[in-house]
Length: 350
Image 1 (cartoon, one colour):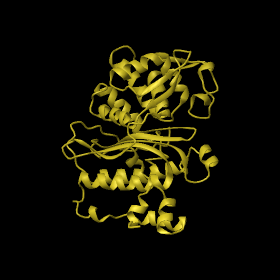
Image 2 (cartoon, helix red, strand yellow):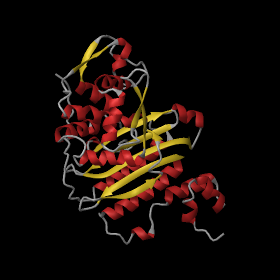
Image 3 (cartoon, one colour):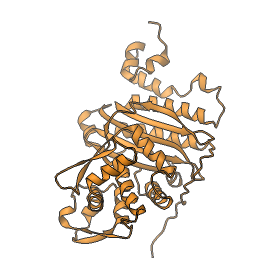
Image 4 (cartoon, one colour):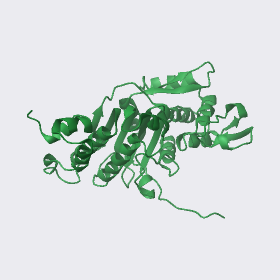
């Protein structure tokens, strides 16, 4: 066969490369790690968006093929003029289970009603014992004392940082499922929809496509979804150090993490994450929507029970995340809007 080593490694798995090259799986895996330079990249000017896109695409290809599973993704990088161009596009229009990534969409609908004067962030919601989900996620299940009450702002913070599922129900009290879907459709998101149940205030988090989630994030930072105040509020929550850190942000420092707005979602075999990487001035440079499911590398039963940073899909996202952030460091862009984040300030109490 007239086949190159690079082509073999691009077949989609270490096993395929091993079969073609006549190497062991361990050796082929090591070769995947070694492929960190490509001759065609050497001609590109350092610090350019095009070089960043090529490096991101290469890293994505290597890490997702190593992790295996089925990936549906879209990653875009801003040019110096602010235009966002594609770096990765794989099954981008596949309708996928969004899981908790759709909590961003839910938050958008709540803040949309805030912008229209129908809700207030300081408006209080009652937390009753029957609404609390005892699922070991989140914080409301840890209170141990009900009824209590929180503000809509508090519910959104819990929804987007610790991904509290009780907060989903609290949001449903002020924006029922049918209204969530209607608001999202009115904004152009026909696949990013929750799944209503018999109780009109409750729902499953539903579906999306990588392209729609990418577009939602892009419209958000362009100021096309919400008011400036609501956009800043949402991005501040998603960039907080309390937000998800086991994937894209795992190998970033505290202040680096504050430049990344991210939301993960998981259930069964699904491991998803979507967000935006900002430069130091608050300009959105890289937008990503990564959805993965299926049979990942390693023991299938162990993977199903592992929602942490050691899962193959999350290891892949961690490696991709470092590349995304390092690419942003070298790009300057004239995107029209900036969304600055504060630096980390630890506190010792009192």
